[in-house]
Length: 279
Image (tube, rainbow, N blue to C red; front, side):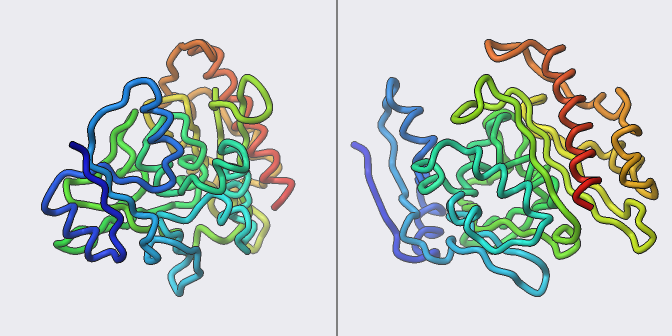
């Protein structure tokens, strides 16, 4: 027989996770559709009452996004222009009802290759905060999301927050997505990027991430390194096929692998052009 528990504080939740195996429930926007046909007995740990996991706040080190913060909270938050891509991604995550319920942490823990939030957070150098009864640790986001439905979450751990460093909050950000239709659609390809300029007007730092073209969203580190020192208006012209070599798109009903790769190339170039204009 299934159990249901809704702890009132983080310590209680972590004690329960340390003692037994639970399915953690936040917004439930991925959990319930996955069980519409194939229901199963499972013990539910409902974390919606944990205030420590909510909210978005500026800190001395940058920005802290509570794991239970909703995508609507991201959209409504007063964030710097570097987070414009994150806000754009938030607007693409389902409709208004999903944005009001779905959480940032849930999107990461679900670890779908097509999760819109992951590339945007990768482009902001995000780290995840993982808590257990034994303490707290941090991981870069690209070491947390390991593949399709796979994360580095250890038994007894709970994702409690996402941290964005201050350096990543400087500059501007963008997010582009291709789907089979304009809204309410699973991504075929998505690209997120941020760009910060040096005092002389050249690119001081750029971060580019591509989603839905590999088992987990990827940063294009070779491209990022190649852009440093360039005029921002020349950034898009620097892109070549070698910068996309790490991508490994699949073929499915939404598009074959060559189509996805070609689309990724186009969206990366468009994103770089948009970033240059904004910068």
